[in-house]
Length: 193
Image (cartoon, rainbow, N blue to C red):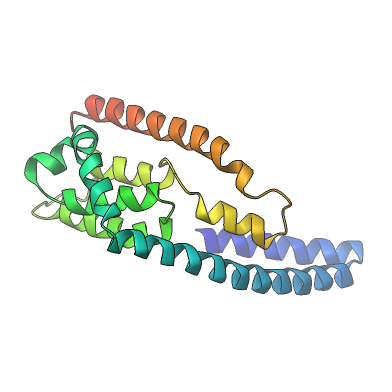
């Protein structure tokens, strides 16, 4: 679907460039965008590598395991079926821990593993409330260290980069709570809780 939307936007851009006589501007924009994207990706690789290294040190020091132990009582409430049936509970805990520490790239494979575990021994293609909650928290989880946002701001030359941390805490915390509440309400309505 995204490919179709992107294709339609490209076709519309070319048509408008032809009718307005601005093919040179379109060509310049394409080349400039390609150049900036390569520069941004290279900058992000360095910054993400640094933060992944920091997170690996935290993991080796046992801090991730301690965070997981702290989160388990809370996550038992958020993911009742997973913890009751002991399916995917460890993967969910690791995924949420990675998201909290700002490692959304590392949390994706953990989330996929958790979904596979939650889907074991099921014949239905319908997502359970725990699966939906995990997807919501993958998109709207509290982030202690917003590494991706900081990396993008640094790559784009922002003069203030780390001042966004407290607003990110507030917004991501509110989004996480609202996501959990809505997921629980919808789960109760659908009878999946």
